[in-house]
Image 1 (spheres, helix red, strand yellow):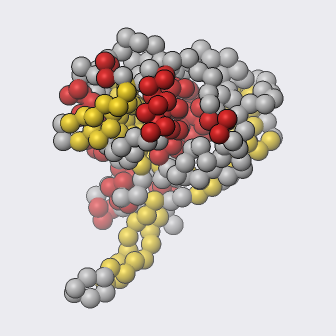
Image 2: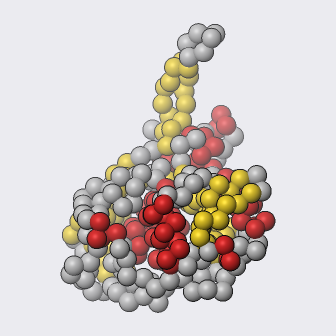
Image 3: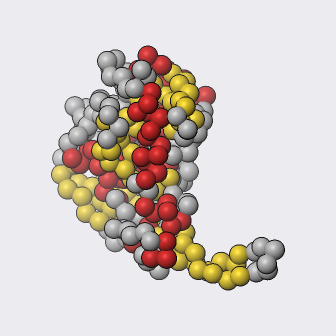
Length: 277
């Protein structure tokens, strides 16, 4: 049962992101039964022209953007000047499926996924380490951003996390311009899903590449976050927690300024510090 978290004074445009549950709170005063709210996690099957491509676990909402962003990051559809099949139409298939219709078949031997990708890892469905390698040009030099702007982004991201206010269980990703103005923010139970929703929004709007914007994510930064950022053209990625070693190596190789531990005005830059003024 999805509902409005009125008790916390938060309104939602997507009621299906949140579900009410009964909990028992334990404290020195004794047990107390209450109603609480949790983030919804549910499967979504993505199909292309009748054929299943993957099943991902996500928070319902922005499913078209999620499908577009995921397929774009996998190199399976065109966008932002990149060649490939173009999306002609997108049709929901109930609450747990979505189908994209393209103007050409998916390329043979393209990126393949196992038929389940968890909400925690966008690379978990890859069938080999070789599949982690991507054929992408580096993000062009030139774009830079002030340290103070980067330092302000986690708070700006947090202020837009409406569902997080009620659940404490959703990640977020957002695109911001060089002045720190929000372009788009999306939430999901999976960090990589939230990024896919941001990229998919831009794909649908014809906004790619994000060559003059910063990607800010909640939590840590792992390989798949940076890989998706490179696909979308982001020159800067910022996160409130630490990056992984593979994320740092990928950012260094592809020209992305990778910032971690962006908290309380401080920024730690792990790759391409020349982009941060």
